[in-house]
Image (cartoon, rainbow, N blue to C red; front, side, top):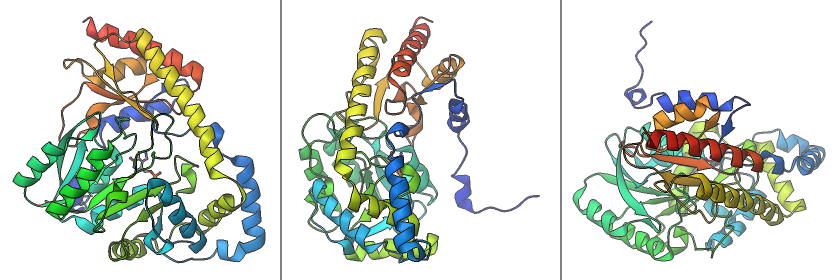
Length: 395
Ligand code: PMP
């Protein structure tokens, strides 16, 4: 059979890395590869109670179709929670999505024609790169440092590049680098976007998971012209299985997202939305988030301490103040895809960093997750990883 697929499918390929990552789900593997929350903190007992409550009190509505925009009381609560990101908004500016991943896909659908350019941090989130690729775009990677994207580099690049259509950033505890943008860079980004009339997609799944340092207002909080589209999610602060995220944007922009959601899936899961809403009514999500932060801080501390003790000094890594990941850079001649194969032979996994650079290169980097493995596995896995790295360096 020789079926003719759409051109866009040429851009979407199974990567070698995906094949490797499939091996990391073996139970004996100590995996620092995923971006999974700690499942032992999922509020299962509470969810049993709220599911029952929803079914008993509003069963017919919970199992029925519901509005594309989302369950109104949940939109209200999300609008209120946006205050924590420094954003004053209302339920009319919130669309519930099937995770923030759907918001990424919709952003591509709404803004990108084939050949258009998306500005991204170098490195950037693989899931966003893949979502945008389906719209046959190109990527303009802007160098980053410990304070986020370097604004001089961005301005220079925008002056000399044609067809730039949007800027995509993850300013808090970035996936993959764990880094956080400074206050000044956030403010400056909005000024630059105003000057070049570009939308900013601010993807913020980790912002509420700060366990060290001062909170910094979201990029959306600096928005004066309605050009920042904020993507939020309950995946990391609650649980990813319900698939509840949201888009917060000005009405004119949000209407585009609502239109494409109608075409994509009509609405997000009615039952999930009502369960989450009932949870937020009955329980204290912020208290739950405190528990998550405490656990992740311990795991981060333990991981960084073990890395400090065992990694050779040539390896540099970030000190995330929140979120799920640290990011390591090895000497340039080390290829972390090869290193991953060696590590997997010894049942340890991470994500080789090259995948996070849409235009290639940087094969000497790696993303290491600390949220999902128990404390003893973190110590054991990092020690093994250190040995694998030392062997590669001594070759
Ligand atoms: N953006 C970033 C930066 C992420 O790391 C993730 C999840 N790993 C997502 C978006 C998607 O999350 P979800 O669809 O579960 O909300």
